[in-house]
Image 1 (cartoon, rainbow, N blue to C red):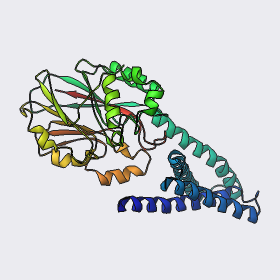
Image 2: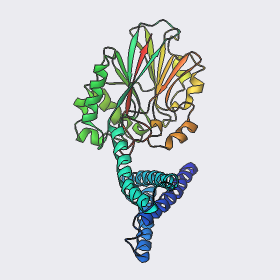
Image 3: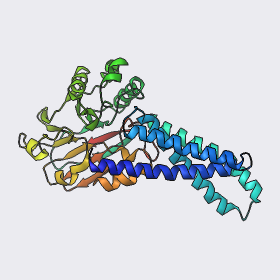
Image 4: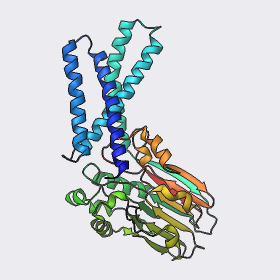
Length: 361
């Protein structure tokens, strides 16, 4: 395992201790009058032991408890948000409300607010929004509407119903072409095949076609099976390939950089007429600054999920030159979507499931 992974895990364990500490302090406040000192100590120790036990089992891959551990971290994060909110309200309102009454109000507010955050995060994960952009290229092109959806992570928690909704949104928005820059499956095709998702994915159609590239979660040893399933659903996978569409523009599809042998975007462009508009599908937005110096007119990416759960968006903002949204750099137009699905657990806070519509002229 690489050093950076150990550092990440160590940081996660430290953050977990902070979350548990805040949670225990909150429980102490909530149940101060109902639990004896001995019972509170037992409860607090159990919280530390159970949470750390689950996380360590996940880190060392003793049991496949990733989703349970991820939910635990998210729950404790949300609980910390609510605890800090209650603490802030306490300091602001205590000059105006009798202390006993204020504590009673906050004790009632705490579980309601925590349930609300959990509900909002699940709603955001399963309720897609449509983001619209309009751009003008420096090269001649017939007006065209692109529909972009990335990071579906098709699996046991995201499947047929969401695919039907995606097809419905693309049809409603009358897109001319659909681009899917990576992480279509959640690591493998097992749930996809078991749940018979192919007919639902095949509902994605557009006059100029549906095109995809593979992301990092498509390269965990099942890339050929994933590629085959996508093609059987009528999606053309650009496997470090280029394709000229109606002699009017060029699609360039790059594999994720987990494939160390992938050619550079510059090498792929050697095969095409760069006088035509160039549209690049590249799962990760890591090389945007490099691509801005190439004759690339549009790049569509995903991967970062806009952090998925706040405050992870602060981290992705530091990691990538553009972790979400749209930016014009030189003559290039760069788009990074938060993704249509989610990774790990069906929760989004500070981000939302989305598709992107790009009107090009």
